[in-house]
Image 1 (tube, rainbow over the protein chains, first blue to last red):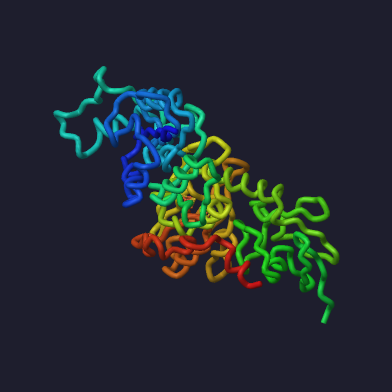
Image 2: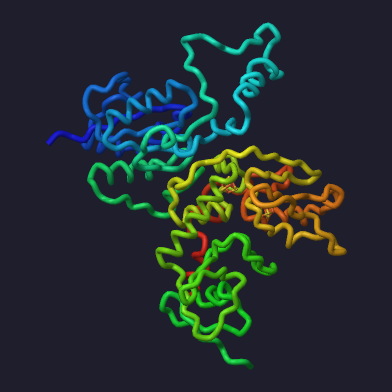
Amino acid sequence: MSKPVIATASLAGCFGCHMSFLDIDERILELVELVEFDKSPIDDLKKFTRPVDIGLIEGGCCNVENVEVLRYFRKNCRILVSVGECAVMGGLPAMRNTIPLKECLEEAYLNSLTVAPEDRLIPNDEELPLLLDRVYPCHEIVRIDYFLPGCPPSADLIWEALTALIQGRPMKLDYPLIKYD
Amino acid sequence: MPDKIKFTIDGKECLAEPGQTIYEAARANGVYIPVLCHYEGLKPVGSCRICSVRVNGRWMASCTQPVTEGMVIENAVPEVEEFRKAIIEMLLVEGNHFCPTCEKSGNCELQALAYRYQIMVPQFPYLFPKREIEAFPGFLLEHNRCIQCQRCVRAIQTRDGQKIFTMKNRSKDVRVNVDRKLAAKMSEDQIQKAMDICPVGAILKKEVGFRLPIGKRKYDHRPIGSEIEEKK
Ligand code: SF4
Ligand code: SF4
């Protein structure tokens, strides 16, 4: 039997959840036995090469590229998991959600004290993905099957969730595993 | 001495003192009923409804309802627990709760309840409302996190009994209102008391913060309510 295939992505996140994933320490040796990696920043594969069993998504959606990647994952992954506060609820990037986008951009690129007068310019290059009006939790864009809160979720939670999904058993969520910070 | 009152919670036979509320009597019998707006020693108002139980088939707020002889109370049954879970989820989406940035994280009763109920994501959409942060000489009032429980309103007064915190507006616009003049005269201890009594991170004493490291905070290792359940 072939091994389950997993893929990961970091959208509007800080890569902290990926770092926390690597925090599984020596269990990483076990992981290599358990699964194969497809598209992920860990192996730098840019495109899916086969159908994926479990997709792990870090970060919410703050721009159109995030939305595109998320939809691409949904299409290619049997199970999709929101990993971390940003994927689950927008996280720190979503602190801009109560401020109109125009005001955010003006504050960051025009009015802020740290912007030198000659640098006052709101970036607008076609190479840059367009920002969305606000930051969206992943499940407001596509269907998400499981949610792992935490900033970041602990390595233990990620490990427990992943092994449970691979083995097709319910997750054992001991009290210290669920944290929002 | 008046006779004790007999009642049951989830089939467990319990005894109450006359005049005790369901919440108090349950607690005395080692049964945890979650509360948010209620606080030991304050007059209960029964506004958050998280302490709801079913008595002979009817829903009641256990923090205000006195126990009577022969009550059959349902507490930790799926329907009641789902109802409570929904309230917690509504509170989480109704404000702006960015726990990773919050000083109360780890000591917050709303968050602790969400942990106890294993809420991985609220079933409701996040509202991201626009709320203010107000500054007073000794503290901040973070409206993004206020759950309008009115604990501060009931607990904090001047020496001659004037309220420093009051409520204004109605319905979804209801907010805590602070009397600026009186707030300016609050002592450090009184500000600390207000911060401690607030179940969430809405009242924050200035110039201190994140005093307890992760791992040492109130709800890092044990669910809220464990201390009550362990008594019996
Ligand atoms: S008040 Fe509680 S639930 Fe809200 S952000 Fe702070 S820790 Fe989280
Ligand atoms: S400030 Fe705190 S104590 Fe006062 S109503 Fe809001 S949540 Fe309750």
